[in-house]
Length: 221
Length: 94
Ligand SMILES: [Zn+2]
Image (cartoon, rainbow over all chains, first blue to last red; front, side, top):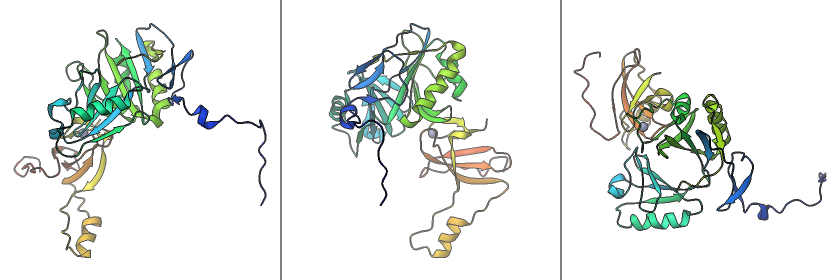
């Protein structure tokens, strides 16, 4: 049987050694650094409107009936911080996503397990950190950017601080959470990882008229 | 923009939803092949009020039932499967 002969460098990088560093699907702007085993950007902008790739943050999916979870979790359509600083988001009527510090998945899961120990019925916990991308769009004009590519009414009356919803952003099914930072509107946008670069590019494009700048990874948990 | 009211999320852009077709009572397990064939393939497709299943695929991911007018696109009721159906027979517009 004829076989092809590999041409080029004789040695290829060891895939095991290089796979130890996790990467977001979004191209990172230099300079780069490492954060909890992820390659992240440490770019600093100081701009009034910033877009940052926060994909390394911990994301834990919780599925349970709302009666089982009770009041220990946020309501559907709302997001709030728990005592440990996690952001607990009511993403669907029977589904929550808990965001936390990068690299804290195991600790986050055991804390949730502890809290839901008395819950009736089945509860499912899955670490989906590597399934999704998360972007942070923050600044006075953040709403203006999002309004261009999302059909939800983002006014303070219908979507105040602490609002969470699933809808399409630039055609992509996303979870959007508003959690204002320093008195300015800020939105966390969570989507399937495979849409990451596209969604990021669309946000940069939509933000161009508001002078959005791409910021590096920032700690929000 | 055509708005469709999801029982969970409220009024949303129709492009967030997937149409799952006319809804009809499912035959019982003992139903014969004729009944199943009618259930699966025979649709009323009226020019008027129709009862349909929609999936909020781009939102909460849940399915619900809707009464929609196939000519005017008016939606007079939406409700969750297994819940009591709203009484729309006396309302105007039918
Ligand atoms: Zn919905």
